[in-house]
Length: 351
Image 1 (cartoon, rainbow, N blue to C red):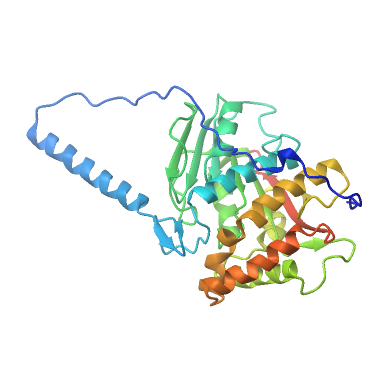
Image 2: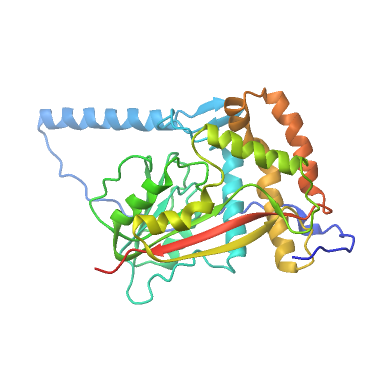
């Protein structure tokens, strides 16, 4: 990437539009149980309904910390990102950034070339935006999205369902998948070798797994990112903090070998670059830089707060003062920094 040396004119379209859209589809009801006058059956149904309501209530009882809300399901899990409306908007913006990066594609795996897919899993679905787009593009495929928080929309493609679960538990699916997809799970999963082994076991022969992820620290090709700049400091502190949580921010560097170790073949890795802002001259990278800046610099507090307070022992006030300086660096077009984005995919051998 080469830097744009021309002064940048302010563009009217620089304000970030709300990218969050509601998918509309006809939702069919499941088979209803036949009416019964059996009092014991009615009581059992009431008890089951009460139990389900209690479970749903506990899942929705989000924990509040430093003004942000976090998942309630398996609260002790060291997942450090919030789940509130600001984070949901960031996740949808991030989806747009990834599709721009991949030239409009949702994935790189060569899936479905020979036969239609039966089932696909979106591991860590977030707002469900990728799963919705995938389900729309593959109406013949049953798509399942799993996340710790039920923050997905209600109106969905009829071939898509969402589940609240912990992907770090043992997987107990009674069926196999043809495609397993995971995006931006760095810092979210503590044992990626286990994740890839479970993915391997849950795939049908010939099925594919794909991970799309950022890795730390930030990179630079021309020396404009100085050692101990605030971007460099933030990168190093993020690695230190995620390591303390047992979920390193450097995990994507190891996906390729971990897939191979799990038994996958035809493993391929493609590394993209996300500029920290609009500093590149190339229009493609300039646009990526614009969205990347809003994705990371625009939500630094949500990305950093739990890691810095619980992991590094900082006060919330110390975090915010530091992050203000990081944001300034991330907006500086004289600093030609970028983030490595790894897309790694592999295939379970044919039977």
